Amino acid sequence: MHHLSQGLKAAAVLAMASLALAGCSLISSGDAKRDESGKPTESSKADAFKVKLGDCIANPDSQEVVDVTIIPCDQSHDLEAYAATNIDAATFPGDTEVGAKAEEYCGAQFATFVGLPFEESALDVTFLHPTSDSWKNGDREIVCLIGGEAGAATTGTLKGAAK
Image (cartoon, rainbow, N blue to C red; front, side, top):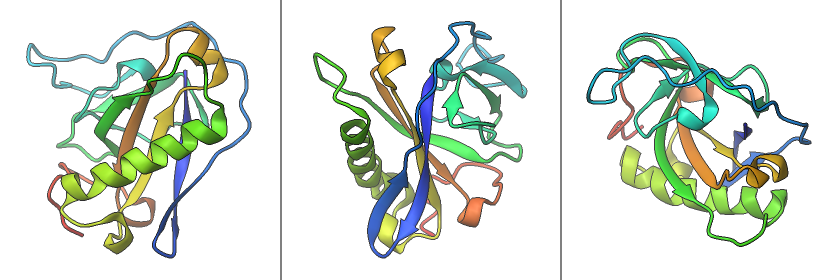
């Protein structure tokens, strides 16, 4: 399970809110239905750890994300995974530090992907990141997610959208 932090617009600052963490279930629903190239072929529930770069998903229904609905990007969706990185640390750095790392990384990658700095964009950003519980199970990944203006659903990729 990853923790989902909501992206919030602040005056020229990449600010994200983080909520209290709860325990996670290790029961997973596997991967999305994909073709040979790895592209999702239909909407399907998948383990949150199976989200790949370029995947489009529905908004998770809670902050503690175990499953996500992966949707082919040419269909209406809420979020698109535009960047991912692993935290390089021997021990869990703490929620504040993980959130700060995710904000910094996702903010830096945003301009490269969209073609406009986050501060000038109307699009929303959020991210999935490890919790102290998921860290114990080997979770190190930050996944940056981009969404439409004011949470609006989008169709197709936002790569190069410059808005």
